[in-house]
Image 1: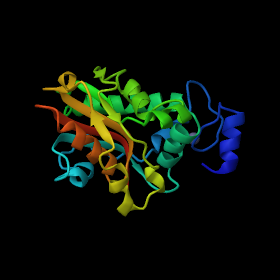
Image 2: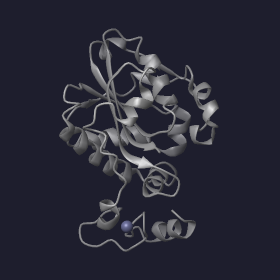
Image 3: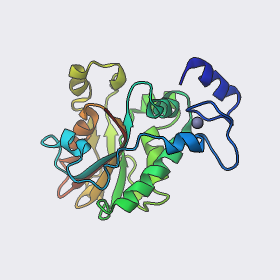
Image 4: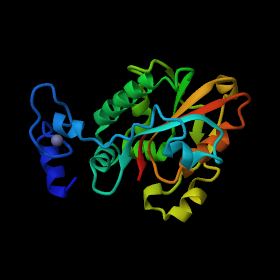
Length: 228
Ligand SMILES: [Zn+2]
């Protein structure tokens, strides 16, 4: 979103966050025209989709998907920035709701037991006011009715923002950053790990390294967006 559009949307929240047009009727956050043109991947029904290919060999997952393509200057980038950096918590839930509808219709995620948000370190959560991945889960849950596991997977040390790291530094930035407590709550369960953006997959891989210590766990992945 351009700086001017951002200011307009902050002053007049009833404008579309993507194009700045005034919202009408039942429109909320994003106008119908921008919603219709979101860059959907249609990966959710595709085995061996590009999200799965990116994670193959690094994570022992059951299924993986990304709902939208993310690229510099596209609508997904505007949406994710609004979710993470402009305090738009309602947008996180709205996008999670769309993701939940997609997961439900896919059929490839039917035997998932629990939703697992990628955790923030508590210092980041306090400065942002919320964990966008948890709000995505709350949106997903509206249609894809599963419990959300909060606290079992946690980030035990703060990490630098992945978006500011060079690709080669991303894995080392998050290596060993996650841990699991109350393993019995996850043991034998099929968990669906949920995050907002997948760039190199380093954060998800690090989460899974921690989750793999849980006996008989199965892991699937759903991200709102994937960098093209
Ligand atoms: Zn619009």
